Image 1 (cartoon, rainbow over the protein chains, first blue to last red):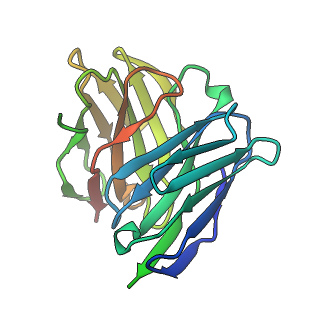
Image 2: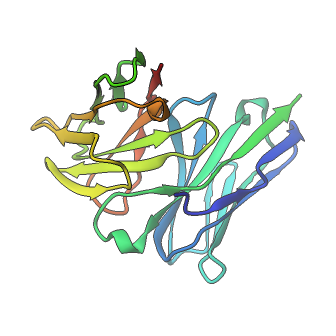
Length: 114
Length: 113
């Protein structure tokens, strides 16, 4: 079963605009990771934020984490057509201990038009 | 350095058949995890292996099995294929077991007819 949900399910913006995607999850976590997937192929790791962190930046990406609300957001600034993809959040539930088990959300499909 | 590699890229099988999917992790990575992604959904965890031992198992039937070899590569086996097994099978590797970044391969697209 899916751990949580991304919101919105689909997002269409113009090049240069910012895109914000939200993720909610259900259980306590060790970390939360964001991935990008192009055309149903492999996932590309974007950023990892640990449960004791509140915000993290990587290039044009900004991720926030609110463990009290069990939610995270991914902001892509100055979007480009190449950012068109599906974006997934994935959590490493604390219950899994030392295992490497990720629980994925349902994904947000981002379309960036010229 | 090469990323995670998977073979084959595509596969078409008939119901009731058996399939073996292969994965080679990033050099130096000792943990391999397998995920199933049905069209329109997020990936679902199937197995994780670390140092050749199973460390985690998802909610999948016993028809699914896996193993890890001394060189840390891995195989996922599915017996008695069902139409519902049609999916993209993703392999991910990480340095160790635990809450580390996981790096995914391109996947194997399995179609069961």
